[in-house]
Image (tube, rainbow, N blue to C red):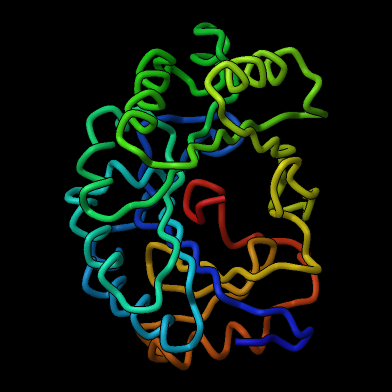
Length: 266
């Protein structure tokens, strides 16, 4: 699929749930907020059908996100369903790593190819502060399990406030170098204010080459992370929602006041 700006759209990021087992300060809002009711969450069969139809339209790459995708019950079944779809050549997942030690082998066996693991500090106290209570040791063991089970390449996502030269980012970079891992430094974004920059070490945030669409956990195909637009697969039909999202994909991101990072997958 080509959009109005001649960009090839072949990448679908799927938020399989808005739930998460961490409460990262830059992701989950403070105060009161409501999880999606289970009745609105797409079933695995619906997600697989979206991918199947997307593949006929030119989708080749799929990334599973959340919330935290590994808290979704029987997530390996969904991985297996997507891995079996003709035309999907790259199947990846972004995870916070808390449950990765448990799931690395079954994910690989189900057909997952690679993982990105969120890691903003390798200091246990700082990690617990940023994630509001997360256990760094579980994440590090999860990364080791991913490496041991061939989920290559394992990439690290590190959120920074100003630059990759911040103390936490530097120690993450040193850890990754020892492990032979690459790091993507993601500058802290603001959906409502429309603030984002290009990811250091990745292609995210570079609107001129954006190839992505997003599927939310409740069935909206969104043409851009920084956009309020979303096309409902249940109301419009899957093919029609895909085509509308591609037709309306903006030249660059603006603002998104309809979502938070925990329910769109970042």
